[in-house]
Length: 121
Image (cartoon, rainbow, N blue to C red; front, side, top):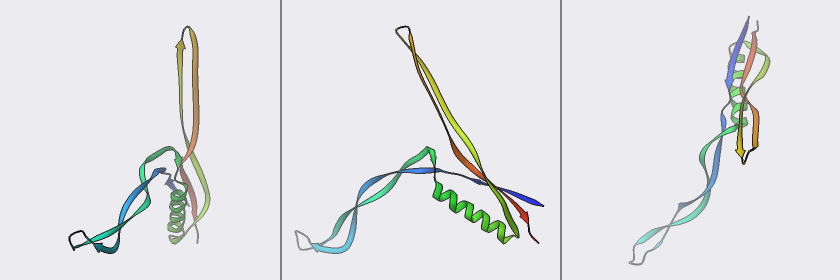
């Protein structure tokens, strides 16, 4: 008896650096004798979106490892792991003064992994 498990891939997050003010826990005397918190500026990564072509390979590896552990815990032994590919393409043609100019592109990416396992014992 065999089992088949699909592990979906997720696109990688897009990030950028952002300057953030963070309280240090220290205070300083204010102008009128009170105390005010001291801040320092730090750079943090902030997610701005999701890629439409690059897979989050670290997440895919963690998800695959978890699926294999789950199968092993239930008495299954992994036989194969097969990638499933998807793709995107586009093309355009423009007419400029009676002449044609165009472009086209295409690429593929791993959209998921298929695990085939057999029951042991």
